Image (cartoon, rainbow, N blue to C red; front, side, top):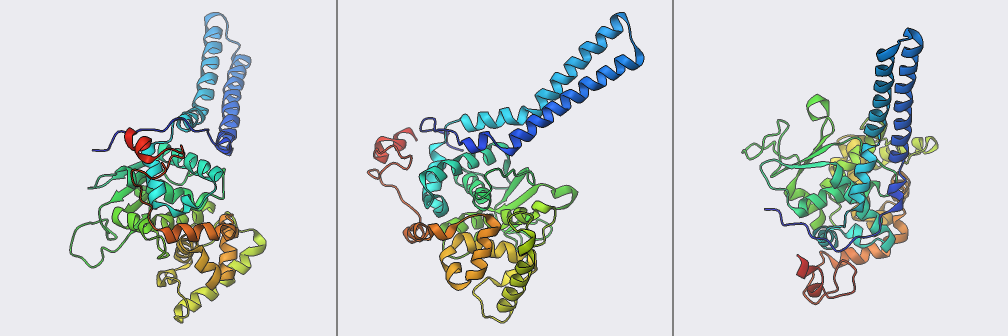
Amino acid sequence: MEPQIKSVGKPPTSPSRLGTGAERHATIMAVVSAVLVLVSGILIMVGFRPTGGAGLTIILTTIAGAWLAWSRSLGKVRRRKKILAAPFPVEWEMVLQQDVAFFRALSAADKLRFRSELKIFLGEKTITGIRTTVDTRTRVLVGASAVIPIFGFPQWEWDQINEVLVYPARFDQDFSVGGDGDNQNILGMVGTGAMMNRIMILVKPDLIQGFKNAGDKRNVGVHEFAHLVDKSDGVIDGMPGVGLSREVTGPWVDLVRRKMQEISDRESDINNYALTNEAEFFSVVSEYFFERPDLMERKHPELFSMMQKVFRQDLKSRLQDIRREMSAGQKKFGRNSPCPCGSGMKYKKCCLSKM
């Protein structure tokens, strides 16, 4: 059974997420929808010139319709504000501190924003276990996988996905799990087509392992969400619609070609799976970029520089902090350790007692 969620007070809400493009867009759509309904009502009144009770009915119906259109359009904004206003759960903080080196290497201000992004993703998207349980650790690692690649885009909206399915083991193209077939080797998948639209599949053990071993250049969660970043222009093709300006599109294509040739010639430490196609190359090197930016910067400086532009994240300025956290490995908290919530108290006298 999932443990009851506890919290450590009410942290300040990230201002960047209260003034998001989504909120502005929703407000504009609310105004447009209400105006359209009102104009329609006015045109009906002018065209048919109803009198008496009929005219009053049209007026009242128009006003009610305008209010309903306004209310529905702003529903997402109200729900998001409610999500952001909720305290950040202690259990989530523990998972971030123990398993997510990317988070631990952030500044205090960026950690606050990371928490807000995580609350939004987990508050608005569905995480469903298929023949397995979705515990707190799994939920938070799915959310962290989503936040890491888009952390350079403060106004990002995950409109490309509604639900993440968590499988207990690797599966095949028919989504079969638990058989003896050699084809059950898929770790994750971004759904396409009518049945799988806006759905992602992640394999629970591989998701956890991707964060447990932060130095192996592999993270299936980041890999799959990188595909969705690539899909920001509507197509998963290794040419993300964000980050790459027109003037660097040509150099990016040339760089990908050269790097894939190096892999083919066995002159590269990039995973051979990157040779599948340009889309898989992008997701594979995204894993490398976020897992071992120090190694990529040393061995593939041109690729590293380009990946910083794609994701709009200056990892070079944080390499020292990232190395420190990766060297530390999974963080463990003893009873007398400083509490991860940042209260300054010992863990046993703070969050441990609340859990």
